[in-house]
Length: 158
Image (tube, rainbow, N blue to C red; front, side, top):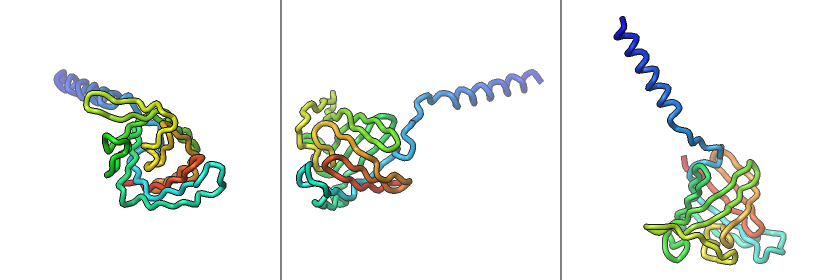
């Protein structure tokens, strides 16, 4: 009888520890996960009203992966002159997405991009070293982000 009680307490203790051991839970809701950039519509100038320049991005293999407050962007082409990956910090709030800091990852360190006018990330929809987007559509399979210069259309991979 005492052995059964000890066994039961041990199992309950392990179950409680297992349930509470993961303290970092995402608050990103539907934006979490891996998204493929399919289309980009751009304005020739930021003063224009329409996104008149269209680019089909499906063949470029550009993926945005959101987890906690980290965004990993990968591509089959070089994104920043050194690697096919860019790391970014972001803030998400229902109808807004802010890319706040972007980094070039290296083996031994990450290098913060500080040039606000850089064009090395423009092919993936980030102008400069940070971008702000209005979330025009966000479902379990589609996302449309619009910035001052670009409209990005994503498909979610499940």
